[in-house]
Image (cartoon, rainbow, N blue to C red):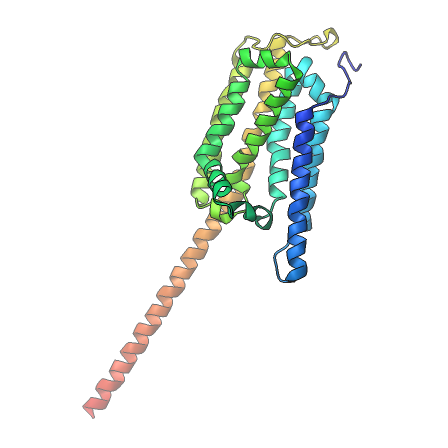
Length: 293
């Protein structure tokens, strides 16, 4: 016990199955890529940085799901629960998704059925609605308080929030360009609007003045009320908003760079057009001079 907090490790069959499936599918994809590379040395490969990012995210997922963090978040502190959720959705999920290059994910689109499902789920509006609806529905007080009493149900909640966050990140860092037809302005608009429901919920947690999750067994040694714990959770939940601002910066820079490139190309086309006009005028002048003599 640490300040009254339990240090018992947790177990989640669903989390274990999810870990095994993620690793198996990723390793199978790497095997297929390496097989194609042996047949064609010019075939695309997966950068080692992407592979490292995936397995860092994978290990982080394991640490969160099976460590005392998970147990404390379910039984003793709502703030720890929210810290786990924020870490899963704003660090673990983008690491896993960023580790998957187009050469790994592309074959999934070749099948007509799976391709149609993936195209639908990764549409920005659909992905945002699914994630926000999942997150807010699970954190409705009656549903959440009920999930606290059942470890399998609580684990299901955490898994669904995590998996839908993978969809939520796709419009920003998804590697298949075919599924990202929207430009930088729409990507920035997506980042701004997508985070609003969660931000509103975070402010509700901080300023409601009422403890919405009274079933947590907060250790007496911590001298913390349920509302204080909830307010800390709300403050933690505002962190993804700061991450959104960080994501906006490279998108804005890339957009400005694209606009500058388009402007430069347009200037070059106009300059070439003027040169052609000048050459035609010189030729006409020479012809007129020749006719005059």
